[in-house]
Image 1 (tube, helix red, strand yellow):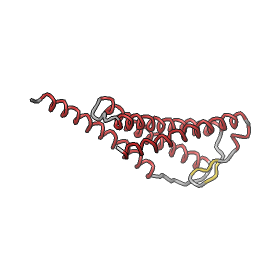
Image 2 (cartoon, rainbow, N blue to C red; image 1 turned 45 degrees about the horizontal axis):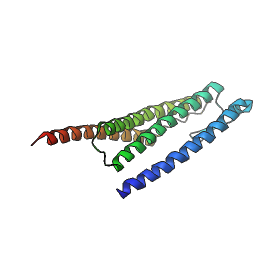
Image 3 (tube, rainbow, N blue to C red; image 1 turned 180 degrees about the vertical axis):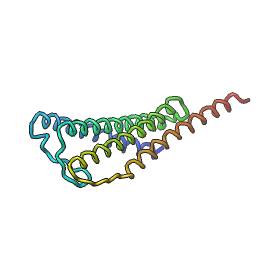
Length: 170
């Protein structure tokens, strides 16, 4: 159980640092978007400096915010799951649902990453830069993580059913 407490401590630290960082970035973005110079700031996309148009900038900000929201949702559910594991609550419907939510959020993040890469490539091609880069590492990592948690939720569901059947056996 010591490892679970270490994991929970690490997740809590990352969670609180992320919350504070997100709050600070949100304040900076709000003040920056009020300024007219915000839309003239070059963005580094695949190591290329590009100045996207205001609608493209807003689209990128919205997509990144949704992606960060799904990652925060993963962290939130993972923290809840670790707390339940620490209390020795293992094969319960709540854990199965948390694992399924984590897996679904990772798969949603995978789709958002693909969309972000597509938008980034579109902006580059629109500005005459033919990069054509497609970082499969991020996609692979989030997709495998999502599938892992979805499979783990199914394993927990089967284990819960097996446990209930064994408890009914005399």
